[in-house]
Image (cartoon, rainbow, N blue to C red):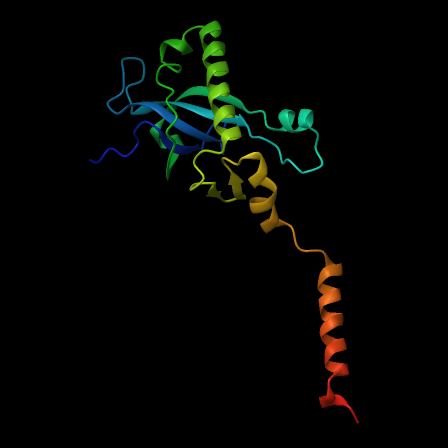
Length: 183
C-alpha cells in the first residue's frame, strides 16, 4: 500500500474536539505502537485562526487579530482527511511524542509551534495554496498583511452600488446624446 500520510502533509481533523480544524502531520506511525496498535500520527494544528484585518485597524489591533492558537495531538488515521497541500514547516525538533507526556512539555511545544505558525502567517509563505476548500467555504491559510484585504475579501464583498449606478447613468446619458435617438 502506498503511504501518502507523510510528514508536512496538510490534513483536516474530522473527529473530536478539533473537528474541522487544519493540521500538519509531524510524524506518522503506520504500524502503530505498543500503546496504540493502529495507524496514527502526531499532528500540530491551528486551534484558533487569525481574524480578518482591515485597513483602518491600528497596528496593535492588527497584531491582536493576527494571533494563532495551536494544538498538538496524536490522531487515528481514520479521523484525518488528507489534502493535496504540504507545508514546509520544520516542527520535528519542537513537537515530539515525549512532549505529550507532561503538561509543561506540551505547553512549551505549543508555544514554539505557535511562534512558527505566526511567523509563517506574517511573512506570507505558501502563497500558492492560500485556501483549502471545506464544506463551509474557503478558509484562508496564509496571507500577508497587504494581501488579505485585496485578494481574499475582495472576492467575498461586492462593489458598491453607487459606482455601478453611475456607470449605467453615464451610458444612458451617452445614448440620449447620440444622434441615433434624436427626432
